[in-house]
Amino acid sequence: MARRWRPRVSALLGIVFIAGCQPAMTNTLTQSALASSVSQSPNVGTVAEWPLRFDHHLFGVACFDTQTCLARYDRFDFGNPEPSGPTTALPQQAYDAALTASYGPVARTTPAAQLAWRSKDGTQLQAEVDIAALFADGLIRHQLPREAIADGVSMGFTHILLEVSDRTVNVYTRTMIPTKDAQIPGNKYSFFRDDLIKVFSRTY
Image (cartoon, rainbow, N blue to C red):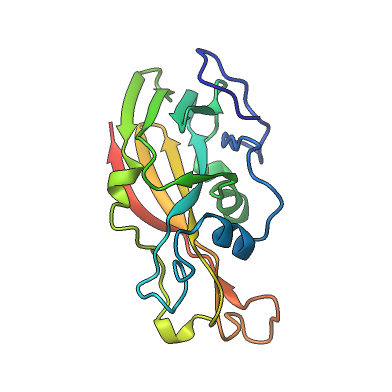
């Protein structure tokens, strides 16, 4: 559950060692409906406006190989005050599931995230991650040509994931983009791409 910043934050249980905390601020809107509700223009996030752009995003935090891990963003707490295991202890599917976001929508211009964590060896670290600056161009990062994207769908928001792994901070983005063709031949449930794309990394 989301709460305003306090010195101590309770963790939500995750998958295996997952320390991602997703405050319960989202609703049950579908992706297209949510995008339509927050976009400033009806063409934001559609192939009618190219390249694809976003106004708002969903946000999530995942912590690995830390003794404690706390993030503050949009005036809310994320993270895990308990030790978390390394990413190598997770199967790929579980790791992929950890790097999803459910808090939001948050305006792209939201002030920087503040991090305070203790690395695997016990070193106390702090960092500021300016997500607004990283995505100042408002572009949705993806790996699809324009002609491959389904017409008439709205993607006015994207997922932004902040990962703390020991001494390294990574920022990823992913967007579910409907496609004209199945991405897995013969699989009727694969008419989309949601590639995880790294946009920032720094070791402290």
